[in-house]
Length: 245
Image (cartoon, rainbow, N blue to C red; front, top):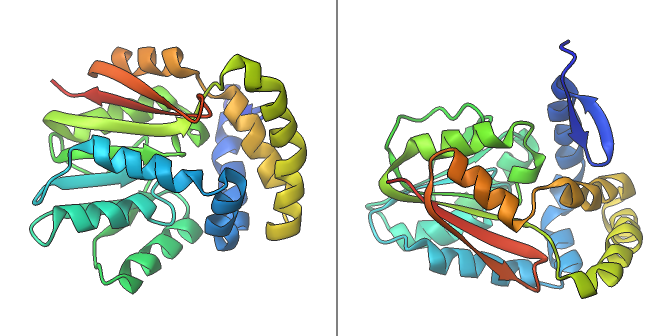
């Protein structure tokens, strides 16, 4: 094991250990993931994702890659947009999450391809996708800049990367948001998913994730152009968009 460390929530852990710990979190919450998303966001995650779909500019016949796509909310919406001539790949590093997403796709009548893979080593050719998205997954990745560079690599020239992620809330709301995050979220996790610790990690991981301007700079550093972002729900979430030129 190397001596390189990273963060897992507020803990400092060896880089090799983070992937395993994140896997344990999502394997634990997979069965209740969609229910908890609705509860803890008061249903707002559906609006955030709908906005992402609208901003994506995806059209019939396009190729879309949904990185860390989990239970396939975005993949399902994109599948309806691209139609039978298009293609949507659902990917996730976690088998439990990917299985739920694949099953949901099939239940809705879509047989789009899925792949269990690490976002830092995407198994796709250069210049292939019209749009790449990652929703609430980037903050769990060990080397975010490597993952962002990989997502840029698989985009065709003119393609766009969309990153939907928790970000920095409007400062006057911070005390209330902290109370909700560190008290109510773990309590809900315990009552609904029988797992308070995973939702305590969620709150901590949000605080450790780069803010709006930091993430914009990271996207620019890996070669994405015209990077901008949209603050949603007072900055609780931000949607970043960048283009491969």
